[in-house]
Image 1 (tube, rainbow, N blue to C red):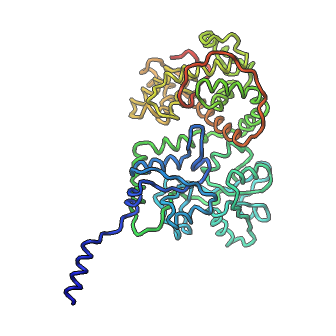
Image 2 (image 1 turned 180 degrees about the vertical axis):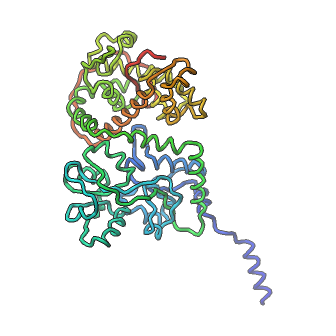
Image 3 (image 1 turned 90 degrees about the horizontal axis):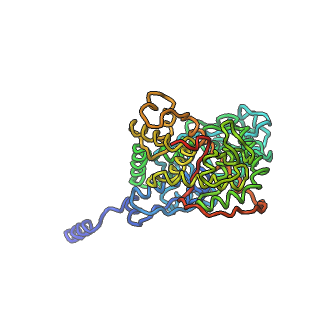
Amino acid sequence: MRVTLLLCLAILAGTCSAPPTLLEEVQQLGKLRVITRNNPTTYYIGANGPEGPEYELVRGFAHFIGVELDLQVAESFSRILPTIKSGKAHVAAAGLTATPERSERVTFGPSFLPVTQHLIYKLGTGRPHSMKDVLGKRLEVIDGTSYVDSLALAQQELPDLVWVENPHSDIAELLTKIADGRIDYTIVDSTIFAIYQNYLPEIRIAFEVVTGDSLAWAFPKRADDSLIARAGQYLDFIRDNGEFDRIMDRYYGHTERFDYVGTRKFIREYTKKLPLYKSMFQDAADRIDMDWRLLAAIGYQESHWNPLAVSPTGVRGIMMLTQNTANSLGIEDRVDPEQSIFGGAEYLANIKRRIPASIAEPDRTWFALAAYNVGYGHLQDARKITRMNGGDPMRWIDVKPSLLLLTQKKWYSQVPSGYARGWEPVQYVDNIRSYYNILIWLTDNDDTETPEQPKLESKPSATIANAGAGMPEKRNNG
């Protein structure tokens, strides 16, 4: 009997195999199930489809492990960790900070971006300097966030500290409440503030609540760490090849230079001036296959939407065209808003067609903007310098510093077009990116009607794929 039992056990042992790892499960399924949330620092639907820094990262990870991305958007922040804990998703890529409290429910992968928690207030209401100054005021945070944990920790020393945990609002709503004076304070991560300060110029950082946090993806607690280990390999890979920096530059690079006065003025002009020209920008942008808001952002950078604008060098109109450029495009009156906008769009299309199609978006758009400003020849010189220095001439993040080198004889003497004020296209591109993102924010939250404008009857130009851009004074360089 004993021999028979041992034989049966041996047979069973030979036919059983170890359960698959989480990575193997994902690969057998053919899908990486990811839960995220809808905001500018994670995932959203942009002009050309899904966008967002964590969306790009996790989409790349799915490709890295050879599966499709199956994305689900949480109805509320408080649902994210329970979804991971239950195993209904493999990864949470949702702007999560790795905290000890959360680590009791999920396992965090490698951190990929440092963040700081800031207390936010409205400019002009008196800046608080510590949590003691918050007592008795209206403090509201998103339910289920790490900000709740931070406040609970502060409450141990300040028992009278109270706050509201909102399960329904998102961070944009709370920051808008700050700007409107409906609440006094909230807490956000530094990455979130960097984005929203350009949309809501009244909000300000009062003080740092928590430092030393980092964003990380959350995974289900499992006996094996195969998927987490693979995520770490992926993050190392994209850091080494520069893809991580490209993604961060795309979403945060233009936020580093914040101009409170300029942003306030832009929002006023959006209400006052843009409705007069909006349909013109829309029609002109349709003809070159781009987002009209990008074309409008160029127009604002050029002239602040002033059809009578003129520079000391003689460029004129909303799109600030030179006389030579206007002549080449058949523009008879540079100060006529319609002719200027359609002429600028046509010139933009011409510039965009010269940018190599092999350059991926959005870099191809940033190159077009820079060339429109400084001239195509200088852009090509900067790309050549980038190559000389071992950078990638196909990426804006690498070419951007090379433009600055065009002010130095050591470098501009080695390229065909010579000296250029290389800081101007860099600032120019950053400004337009900021204006464009603010316009996206404003138009997505604005239900007002646009006055009807007469359409310019002219032949459409050749179509350019995706968004393009361009502009200032050196229209004939290169």
